[in-house]
Length: 144
Image 1: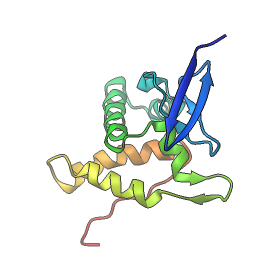
Image 2: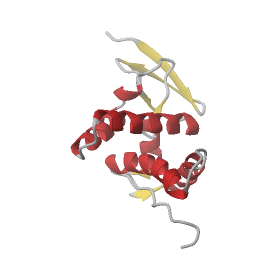
Image 3: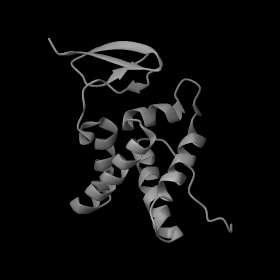
C-alpha cells in the first residue's frame, strides 16, 4: 500500500494514495504536503518531449524548464493546476485564460531588456500551454 497524503486547497480536503498529486471533485490538481520534483509532473514531461521533438538541445531545454518553474512559483500553482484551470473540458470553454495572460505579461516584464527579450520569456510559458493542448494569446506590441 502506498503512502497516504492529505491535500488541502480552498477549503477542500482529499486524501491521495500512491501519488503526490491530488484531485478535487472538479479535477483540479492540488499541491500536496509533499514536494514533487518539478520534472516529474506529467505536463512538464510532455513539454520537455515537445522541446526535444523540436530539436532544442539539453541546455536550451533546461533553461526553458527553469523559466517555467519560475513562472509556477510566481503564480503559486503547479504545472498540473495551470493546465487544469485554464480550460473546462465539460463546457469546452476557456476559463482563467485572462488570468494567465495577465500573469505571463507581469512575469515577462520582471526581466530587464527589450520588448522582444521579455516576450521570449513569456513565450516559454505560452509554449508550455500549447504543448499541453491549451493556448494563450500571443503578446502584441503596444503600437499594434
